[in-house]
Structures are given as C-alpha cells and as structure tokens.
Length: 124
Image 1 (cartoon, one colour):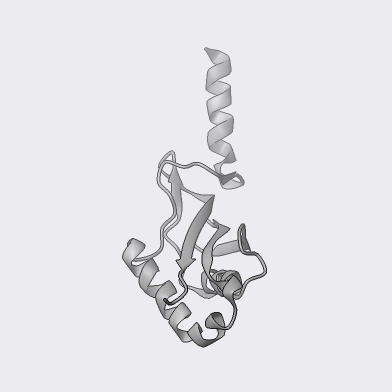
Image 2 (tube, helix red, strand yellow):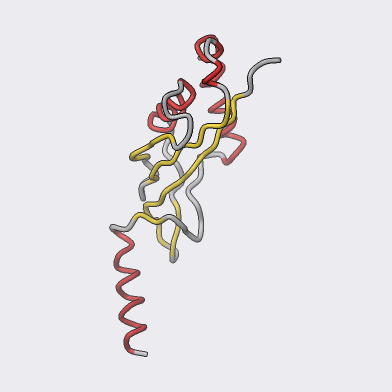
C-alpha cells in the first residue's frame, strides 16, 4: 500500500511539467466546436483563391499541437498534407488564434496534446 501512495504522489506532482496525451477533460477552442468551425471557415474563405489553384490543397488535414496550462498554443505540426497550403494555413491559424481553454487532469489545468482535422472539398 505504501508504494501505491508514493506513485500517486509522484504522478500528481509531475502535473506541472508533463504533457498529457489523454486527459479527463480535453482542451477546447473558446466557444466550442461551432466557434472553431466559424473561425477556420473565415480563414479558408479569405484564402479560397490561393487554395483553389492546386488540387493538393483539397483533402483532410490533421494538425497536432500542445495547449499549455494557460491556454496558449505551442508547437503545431501537420500530420497529413504537410506541404499543402491548407496545412500551412491551419498551423498559422492555430498559432495566431485565441487562447484555448486548457485541458484538465485530476482537477488541475495541464499541458496537453490536441489534434484537429479540417476537410476542404473541391468545388463540383
């Protein structure tokens, strides 16, 4: 029993420096999913002429990034469509956008990984 208590204390004290992949409450965009969709749609609409020039800009781009304990975004990278304009725009939008609501683990805000997918379909 003594060993379990020590392990739990170590895990909780590590909340300050750990970057979590799974958390009790995920980080979220301020205003929720609807606000995220509206934000990304406005970015894409501003750049639709550039995006439409190449077929490689259409598809589903998945971006991963870290949301810090204060809601700021650190380290963002595209997991798919890495060299596309869509990926470039998403990374820029995430890095330059508003602060996110941070993730929670054990009732405390924590630094956590977050993934977002955006699909851009070619006009028919």
